[in-house]
Image (cartoon, rainbow, N blue to C red; front, side, top):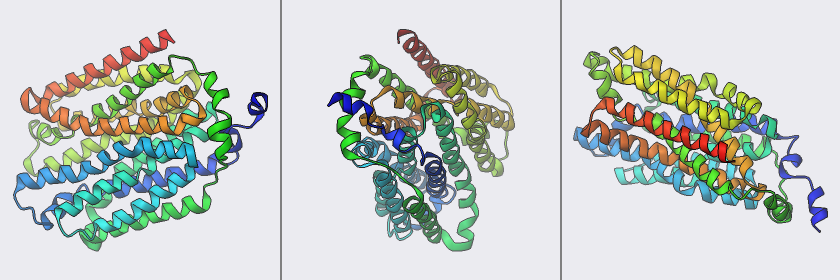
Length: 409
């Protein structure tokens, strides 16, 4: 029986003819879903005010709660959807995420009060996660020697959606109204759902992919993989934490650099976008580099480079200096998430890959939630500049852990 199991083609081998077309759809779907989720940023406070909140402090507070609810929901359910992907296949999880998000995004435009807005944003995270499901599909289908590049391309699509979304959200409400913007977002995601149903191909054999290969694949795993995965999950959380830690204070920080009050919000938007733009430029290149020299080296190198670039951000005197440095930081951060996903995927057996990549997504979204909280607290109780030093130090600790992990393995 064991001998017969070893000659069965693996999930990746059976899906080798489909991974390129699936990658294209996953990139498009990740782009559209993140574009739709992020395009409400410019007008979210206005929508919160429409729903009955009127004091400036309450508007800011509830806007943050409504925006963060989606990421919180995704962090909770990503491991569950990953586990179900191992059991029932990757394509059903993509369809579930796209159809669910298209419906919920449209329903947000029908919200009558603040509670409904927050709950619907939370549901969007709980049942959505198209980008997370895409990482599971791409990470398990793409040949090992191309996985870094493919995950980098996928990351570029997601980053582009996050970058363009607020730009679209800046002018679309003037054409279709605030509520109409949510219907447009739902329609865009619906296009991704149709493409996923029609174009994505998957050869999933529940018996072969969940049972027969378990002993064969599991027996080859080194005993230290659990510790390796924990360090990689911690690193993934720190990557998003580092990128998001400045978000709550960036507008105040730019205001201290002498930018006129009327231009602070605009310059803050440019600085925030600079990081995503820098990541778009290098994500696929650094992913390909990980394929050539090994993802562990890219992870350690990018952590150190990002930590170094963070320090001068505390000493800038002009807003454009901060924008340039944030762009450079985005370029160094870009190599981390694809390389971490590649390492995690290759550290576990096929039958556990979806579940483990789900935990990776949960770690990333946790960093996205924790980062602004830590940055806001440090900025309020210590100083704004201290945020950069603390974040840099945390990344250096992660670099040391990854270096130690590589030496121990």
